[in-house]
Length: 115
Image (cartoon, rainbow, N blue to C red; front, side, top):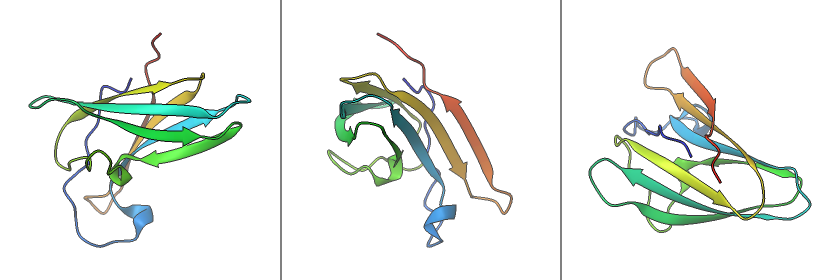
């Protein structure tokens, strides 16, 4: 679970590497592909999801929430939280790059695990 999520308003065209974004960095060390389901929760509307993703065995995936589109794009300028469910054990780290100012800000934390 990641209780904190926020994608700043779109600040126009820029190099993708430096565009503001939220990322779930998923590590699957196991021998089987991980089938992930992501549900987003909001303060002012019903949850959205599941977003579905496969992380192959013995691989990592850095999933930008900005790139999620199905069942709908993740809104910008809106607080949200996410629950990531997997059918095999994985490690999830949350990272945000905020590029609204010249001095970039980076935040990173581990997701909260639950059974």
